[in-house]
Amino acid sequence: MQTKSHTLKAIYKKYSENNKEIKESTFINICSEFNIAIIEELLEGYEFNMQNNLGTLSIRRVERDPRTPQINWGETTKYKRELLEKGEKLFNSLTGEGEKWHIYYVDKYYYKYHWTKSKAKIKNKTAYRFDATRGVKGNKEKLTLLLKNDDLAHLKFKKYVPPYFKKQL
Image (tube, rainbow, N blue to C red; front, side, top):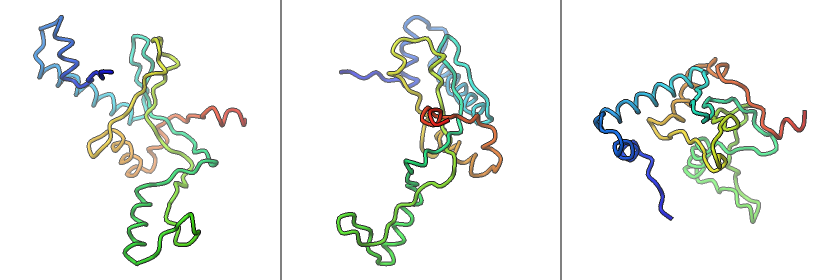
């Protein structure tokens, strides 16, 4: 099975088959600036309607399910390193001995980019997903930094109640 490339260069190549009006560098700059502007609006708490029956993008505040605690890998890695530097023995689930080193998130909510596909009118929409970029310059990092640096930023985002909570209500 051949995978398709969805880079801006690949998209331009397909675009330019029928349309030679815009240079590749101009096309890439326009798309990049547009994407940055959309993310900046999402980080302000707005919802972006993608038009053409594709649904909307937003950032959601989601209540954590207390039945399934999530590991905070950043803090867990730091704590594990500290224990190893002190010469502590790490927890072994087979023997039940050692220091437990997993640290779990305890805050009530987590935040995520969300594509509302229920409004989308495209075939096989369950096969598609929206993944925000990661890394130092990524959009997930921008959201994390916003929430760390602004104590009131969480109020910008609409609360989402997952289906498993709706059943309990």
